[in-house]
Length: 262
Length: 83
Image 1 (tube, helix red, strand yellow):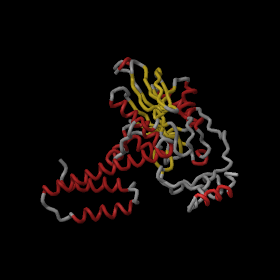
Image 2 (image 1 turned 90 degrees about the vertical axis):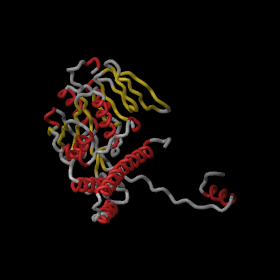
Image 3 (image 1 turned 60 degrees about the vertical axis):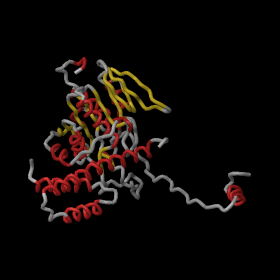
Image 4 (image 1 turned 120 degrees about the horizontal axis):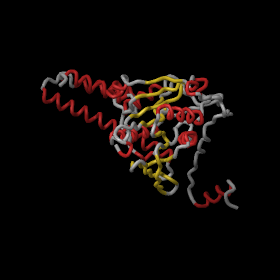
């Protein structure tokens, strides 16, 4: 049980975002206001899956005592909470945000919500995926740490608990960095941290018995006014078709035509 | 221990669930899944049933591993330059 003593609760809060499934070919809406989400398969953000897995492993090592999965968004977010519960989270909190408001929900709002919940739930640790595969913001962990004034360990590829502290190996440009952070802390997971377990059917069924609390951002005193306006969303440029060149002379003439050589 | 019948049904349900994510589409998988079970519907020998159940469970493990690897590879390719 470490220095926290046998009776201390070690609650881990895990952020779970519902995103378009990684295997789906994303399409931009014709009016360029966003991407098509209706009738598209959604799932738990893969980096958040890694976060849940890490929390579950901390619990299996008897470091964590309770895992709370949190998701912000429309009612369908409960599906990803079920996945998290099936993977081993103990209970879920669904922060209800209606579709209209969810479109403009940004990491700053989610960070404020997570910070409030961490205080309310007396969490010892928050783990989130380093980014979501839909907006790729990579901001939630950092801003949550700022709101709570907690230390942060982002892009974690290894987490070890030493006496009261965490030893976290981080993936940084060109190598690894090992840092020591005091608890409570905010962590974000990198791809290589672990291999998330599969949410099997029997576990999904068992997860239906676990509790999901519903709250509204206003219940936590968080204002989710829109700060950022999306002007337009566009597909990346289509790759131009290549040409096959017979010999070196043709190559030179083609390059000259294209203005790459004089 | 659960009856053999319920174990077979359990296996079918689990494989059906796993088939929803099959890369070639769920219809592809579910058609083959049903055909495979129907093919062995008249098997009565308990030993052979055990063998078939074990094979089904092996396929489940393989599918889980396949999905995990597929997702990991997709993420690695998209987010890491050294992939």
